[in-house]
Image (cartoon, rainbow, N blue to C red; front, top):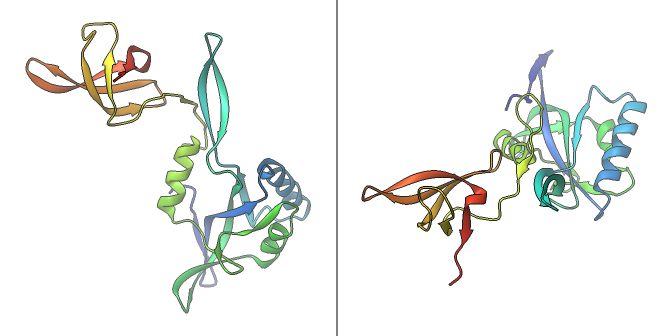
Length: 207
């Protein structure tokens, strides 16, 4: 994960790690906004970095137009990137966050606690964090890209409407949410072949 940077000072290993905090339902954005202000005013920006509400931006069709809409992936959760000390403990390798930053976050209105064991926050693994950031739509440069809202799923049998394969039925093998494309397994010259079509060119089958 490119966001995770490691530095060594006097043999102490510091890393940026992602943590999850739990909030009251509906308070996610308020908690994130309040935390950003408190972190800056208390000069903790070298300990706490990005604060994100896990949402994905999708395109929905409304009145014939594609409109960007934010959709919460995990209600009542907020992601926080924090500087952590890598250390050995009784459970093996672990990470410890700055106590001042922990106190400020834990005692912010709307926060009910960190995801972890007892009062000890447990960070996401690099793979978990990367997967979650990808779902939010954040790439390695930190840029976001909207996902097109496609009401189909891999494995679903659909019918192609229009084009050279009009009327053919096949199973969805892959969905490209960014570009609105779908690969459907169709019979081409007697063999099943993945054919890419627009998501608007397929329809559900009524049984």
